[in-house]
Image (tube, rainbow, N blue to C red; front, side, top):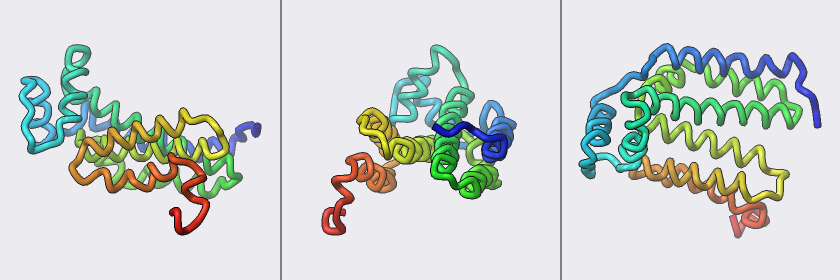
Length: 187
């Protein structure tokens, strides 16, 4: 196994800066949709305007930590773990320039600003980013656990928006393993 070189650690610096910038929105910006979902989590009375997964998660967290902060940490944690996984994958492949580029992508103003806002879309983005990273990092592994974890994250993402399952289909195909990708006809 390769050891991390100091130059490789530079690829993680933009990601660290991006996370710090997103945390500067502490405890997380909330919009009308987020306020409505939080109110539903508080009351336990869910409606069909938003898929109920985010409200359900929030309801589970409420007794431990009320407010938007835990959802901000959850979505930002998933996103940061996913981006760190993508950077690690590029470094494993001997592609430090790609790793640095991925780290810099996390610093894009839209990413930083949106990840500081508590939204089902940002939670979905975090879950899908983490799922992709799990899939890429486990390509050489025969273990089914990373693929199962990625599938669970895709399932979570798909329950956050009515149209989110479409974003998860390619990741689920990768989760099925190389047998799916053997031929163009199967793909």
